[in-house]
Length: 73
Image 1 (cartoon, rainbow, N blue to C red):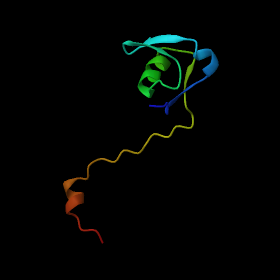
Image 2 (image 1 turned 30 degrees about the horizontal axis):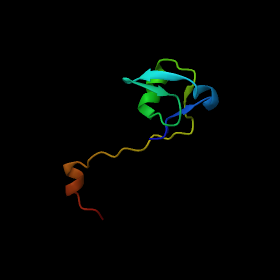
Image 3 (image 1 turned 45 degrees about the vertical axis):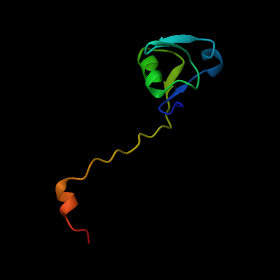
Image 4 (image 1 turned 60 degrees about the horizontal axis):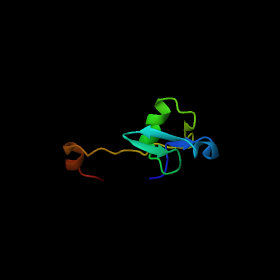
């Protein structure tokens, strides 16, 4: 899955670096998942940054019983 919440700051330099993340050795490239990038970001990896254009998707919960039973006009 492509990165959404994070981005690679310098793809050319990062492409030659491999890291051990979540039990696997990986190259820092577009094949990283957001979960892997989050681990690298939290550990201070200089090639990973938050994507300032990322918008958290709105999560709607399950309607309550009252909402289901209330007639809509």
